[in-house]
Length: 394
Image 1 (tube, one colour):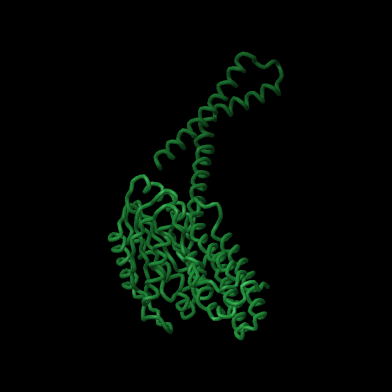
Image 2 (spheres, helix red, strand yellow):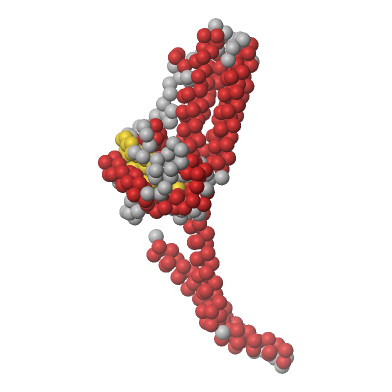
């Protein structure tokens, strides 16, 4: 790739030089065939042109060539910065998405295993609150360096996924190999012995790691492996943090990502309006991870989050109206919980837009806290009422 770019640059410089010399030759031929008459002014102009022609090689060497080279370097640096995280120097989310899509396609052809590792700094918000954001930035830089030192092959990619979360893409790597690297990362960060000590956290900063590896299939988003790694990361954090969880994922065409929730009878409250809205919210949540496919996707993750928030806000409003019509005793408390969830969602979206929250942070909130814990569990409190009010509408 680099040799091809270098050759292209040399060819461009050669063409510029040939063009300059050709112009000089044409002018000299014209002067030879059509010599100036007795006009002193015209003779002076032509003398100046000839002098410029004689200076052509020097103009090329001292002006044109440096300008072209500097412009090319500036463009390359600008492109590099657009794909690099400014704090850690790692690849950014944009480069990660492009790289993953490319490797997903390549592994479809090769049939080899592709691995994804998600790394999340444990209790990082508490670290920032206790030690300040400058120490927080320094902590992330040290951890980024430790992670990068564990992925040393030229084909591996390490990126900052957002906030305190990092992602690795490891081509031609099976689950055992990826898990080994995940353990090296966990141990490497622990070895840094960065003091933490905030309430609820350990003595030193640690990380939780989720690993997924498997084959790539046509018709399946490149983010399917990220879904698996994200699930394993959630498990690692749920089971005590500072640990690695791993699972193999054999993606198959036509699978629904990512919640895996079948909206069957046990989740239906009996009210047609509420059930329809619940089902729409679950299906829209399914679209979030698919949108993260980046170049493969027709929409963006942020667009899908905004669409989901609109659905949720409409549902929360309608649900409270219906519950009050049914004289549900917990309607006010339920409305207060709705307000809290919407405020948290809006805050996470702001953090995501600012680059301070990873997509998986938003995804976890919607799938776990909002869909599973609230829609599918807490809402069960009013099922006995709504089961007898199938057609009550807001």
